[in-house]
Image 1 (spheres, rainbow over the protein chains, first blue to last red):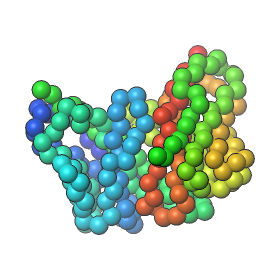
Image 2: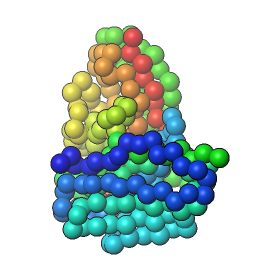
Image 3: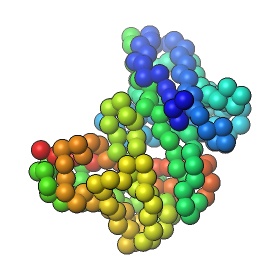
Length: 114
Length: 114
């Protein structure tokens, strides 16, 4: 299994739809997880952190399934502005000096259409 | 507001040239990173620094070196640029500590080597 694996998409959904992405990871020792959003030709920005079973922020819900080693991102009532690539991020083996080495998935592309 | 600044946004260099990519953060973060991002491969860590003058190799350090003489500044150096180093380069920073610390990215530097 790859360290972090995501379905690349694209997911094309109509405005108002609910869409979910999954991300599988191989490091069973990982404790915290992240979803980043990246717009076209822009830098990734933190969307949500997931430390326990899940996290909810407005229309966005992130869930963690440790037994099956996957995290999911659910977007409800999707907007045109949600169109972006969503990156799953999983901590890997630690770096010297307490650094946090993060492994990024290749991203799932979402296109919300009228 | 947190700020990671990459001074060069778009560069075109010739094969064999020495290339410097500069990154400055104003958040007093201990950790700084250089990633490159390529289609289908996601973000890959080139080098990491957890303190002034300290550095650690990431997943793809070959052909690159780094310099961290001041806490706020982390430079990526391509000693002799090659066409396979054409990519988007992202600088990032975070607080020292566990894997739960958010990582903040600069806007990216688009390098083309001809």
